[in-house]
Amino acid sequence: MSFTLAIVGRPNVGKSTLFNRLVGKKIALVDDQPGVTRDLREGQGRIGDISFTVIDTAGLEDATDDSLQGRMRKLTERAVEMADVCLFLIDARVGVTPTDEVLAEILRKKSARVLVAANKSEGRAADAGVIEAWSLGLGEPIRLSAEHGEGISELYSMLMPISDEFENRGQDIQEFAPTTDVSVSDEDDEGIDLVAAERVWRPSVERPLQVAVVGRPNAGKSTLINKILGHERLLTGPEAGITRDSISVQIDWDGTPMRVFDTAGMRKKAKVQDKLESMSVSDGLRALKFAEVVVVLLDAAIPFETQDLRIADLAEREGRAVVIAVNKWDIEDEKQDKLKALKEDFERSLPQLRGAPLVTVSAKTGKGLDRLQQAIVKAHETWNRRVSTGQLNRWLIGMLEQHPPPAPSGRRIKLRYMTQAKTRPPGFVVMCSQPDKMPESYSRYLVNGLRESFDMQGTPIRLYMRGQGDQNPFKGRTKSTPSRLRKHLGKAPADQKPKRGTRPTGGRPLGRKPK
Image (cartoon, rainbow, N blue to C red; front, side):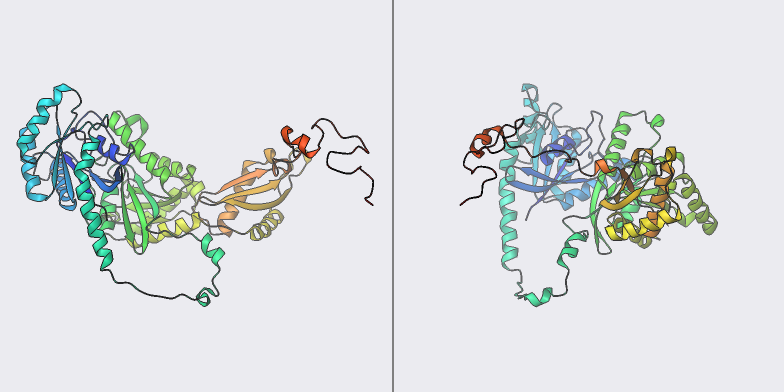
């Protein structure tokens, strides 16, 4: 049983840098300007043999209203209440500030275990700040340098007793847990196709379905995820561009384990002038590449702008299953006419995603979330679909009879057979003559036929044409024997054939039968 550690402190004291150090990856955005982190980010921290959940929080400021800073503070206070241990960071080069004293008083009231650490304490200039940390009344301060990795061993010594306590607590829970003695006979496995069961992959808690919610700023991505979770986990508000980090949350959505990524709003590249916004967009693009299903969230008032189409096209080029969700549908008046126009506009603008599910939702009221969940699960199943070689070749014969391939330079291209080489997304290989002369229009004809015949609407499909010479890359190669073994095997050098009738070492004369 592991514990949860929340890193708290004023803005720009190095919380995200320490978070990245503990998880061993550069996950959280780090910059010199204060207030970069706004949402709560969780990760698996590790120091030596101690494993724990670590939470990176927004910088605590003296704000209690409904402003952006006030909402950030409420989220941080919630993380303090959730955590088993709070690590309070101060800037050793600045020393203890009045804000630090106020925050220390808040932590004493809200958390039972508080450790204080003086970060940025490399060099003698930070000695005074480390000594000042004693005045907070939170015990002996840990001298840290998150950027250079100094003081991690002292943090390990502080966390070891806490880790042992939670480990013993977990053993006590297992000792008193009820056990079930069930005997399973071989008869229970009768009628189960174990090979097929291994091939059919289903999301699990260990391997949840990866979903990324992307779109333009202020489309309602964070509000949508909060509604799915049932509580205010992510920072929301009327301001555009609130989300900066790509925050992932794991949920069980109607029986399907998912890891949902909330990403920063993506504007046109020409409008991105700020370095921090550029970092946020890059973080969102990285989440898109790790996702299996991408939900492109649109604003019903201004749907399918050029940027929306670029985002959807990027998801298709990355080979991800795509679901289009139109948010703020509760304030739309002419729903039927608007929905028909949306579908026509989408299929005309992105023909490569023709048939992708288009769902109308309201992140504010929660209406349409059940349809969105079903669309995500179906898109993921299609993305993982495999078609047998027999079905594909029977289908290919029908497609060739309906529309024969072209004949460039008077020689008709012959399509011999077809097989599926991969899934996620589905990829197919067609063995043919003159693959380099196959027109793009005929490849599209085959891809569209695959979508319609095997119910792969809206899923990226990869089709590869290969010639006969490409089917066996080892064709024409002879098996060679290492030169060191030739004298022991009685073989001649590779470039010299043995003479007829000669006796190889350890053998009999060629052409003579034994007596």
